[in-house]
Length: 75
Figure 1 (cartoon, helix red, strand yellow):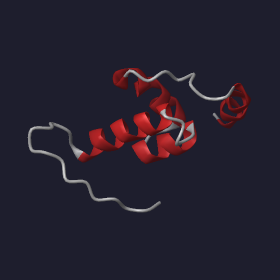
Figure 2 (figure 1 turned 180 degrees about the horizontal axis):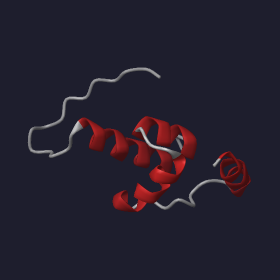
Figure 3 (figure 1 turned 90 degrees about the vertical axis):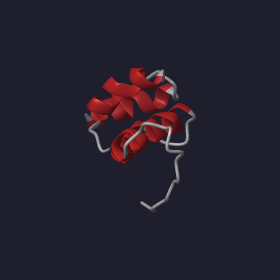
């Protein structure tokens, strides 16, 4: 992975962990990351990451059906 430095306004109340999870959820939602890569970025297992997606108004089922079987087999 590569490192990115973000400068957030002081009024945004997110710590590093919350920021990583938010970014991972939104990158997953946009199709930029698979479930596994997004979970890794968030520092969570696939199952734990799938469970928090709703906190960010992101649906678990937003990627091709062909990937569902592959991800389910890895759990």
